[in-house]
Length: 198
Image (cartoon, rainbow, N blue to C red; front, side):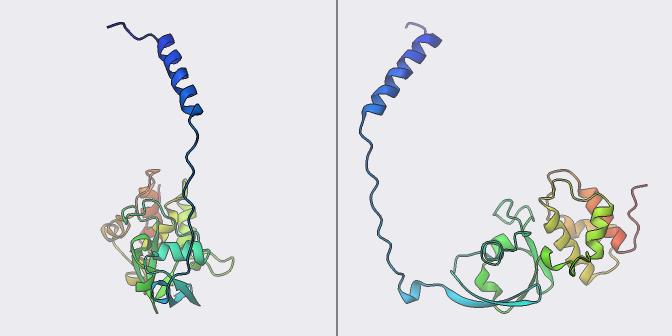
């Protein structure tokens, strides 16, 4: 068998590409949209997000993250893995942290939701946000909102957590910049348990 040289490979590839270009393109089938029957349409839900009431029509398969980001414009809730593994989409639902990418919006009917946008009051940052800044928590910033919300849920339920409790609360939030210890320091500083880098 004759060895294939780079030149012969390119010559053959060029011939094949020319032949492929000569074949007429297939026409894509046309798609006729139809109105959905009433039973297939979305349902209206009521959500209280960051203290504001919202009524909106959602489809049964929409996630809470999708509704918050795409329909309420609260893009601080990130979608990193879309599988409930990274924690970037963490929000508070009735005060408890959850991954909003794996929670259906219809399940949140009548619930109270807090996102990172609701932490500050006007221009006044939440003490936890200030601690994150002081301790150089945010690096790329992608996971920061999820880290903040997990930490906020912890501090709301336990204002003075131990280091082990703080680690446990943040364990479900992945920081790709390896900045986890800075986030931990910020949480402990907010709780009055120390956390200076010294």
